[in-house]
Length: 388
Image 1 (cartoon, rainbow, N blue to C red):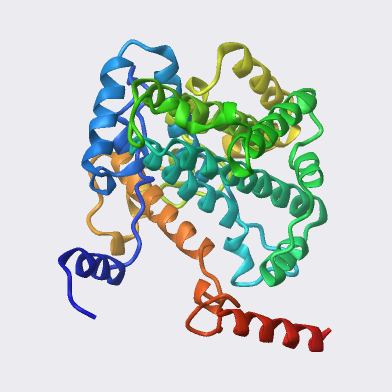
Image 2 (cartoon, rainbow, N blue to C red):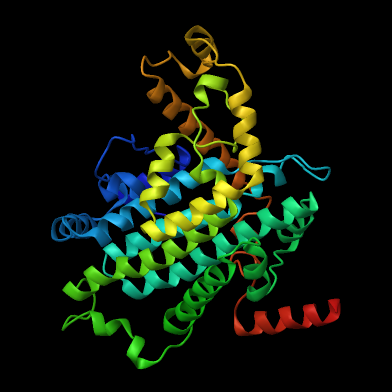
């Protein structure tokens, strides 16, 4: 194989390991959202066309409430990961403890991909990623709920072993808690699922063809396409946030836990006031009031907050003493110190959630291991029939 600078750069990037861009957090006194690049994508990952597309969107939508809401929702989806805990049940193993978060982190990858290909003018591909994004998040909530009710990782273990996924209606129903707005959440997510299936994931009617968005060009951006692809993402993302907000009412009950635990708080129990500010801004006012009502009426939320408030405040010296020296010198600003702890925990959770025993190269359709010529495929069929 001949060397090429671009390929060599990719090899070097792979050797240095994975990196995430999920470290951004707002302070509650901010009045504007950050640039989309720093919120989710990472500027170095974008092509020149994508960078120009972002600059154009930021400019033409500078006073747009819809664009602002879209960025709040992207931000809220990133911050969501800090409420996920890793409960230890009798059948817990080193793998399934964190692999229960696999669905969320895979969906985060797909969300980035949907935005990136849309920014490059590939509108149909952007929508294609959205259906999987939706399904992964429904699966995340489905597994969270059934694990919580059964105190077992058994359904997750079955998925990890053989990839079994129940039918859509079953996972959607069980992904939503018994709440007043259950029907509305079900209908919205089901509507998105069927629309994405009919409009992009399967052969679609001519009226859904992405070529209608391309003006007179064969590919690339158009004015209508650039200003519409992100609206589709925003619509699906808002529905996904509804699902998480219904299942994690603690997201709207922040706690100043640094005063109670220092820099070693319990994982997945509390969120910071600055994060609640993001979640609140990701919703329409009426929708926020509906979800806040769930929070206010939740006995679980009241119990956790009461327990947290019953603990004595620790001193400033005790807070500093809780800092792990292996993480380097402690920053003078406690919020910066907390951000570093959050960043580290997110990296650990995402890395552990993505561990698999077999790589994609172990697939039956790996051309390096299976003869996929016409004769080879027929021979493979005979072998399968003998196994049956």
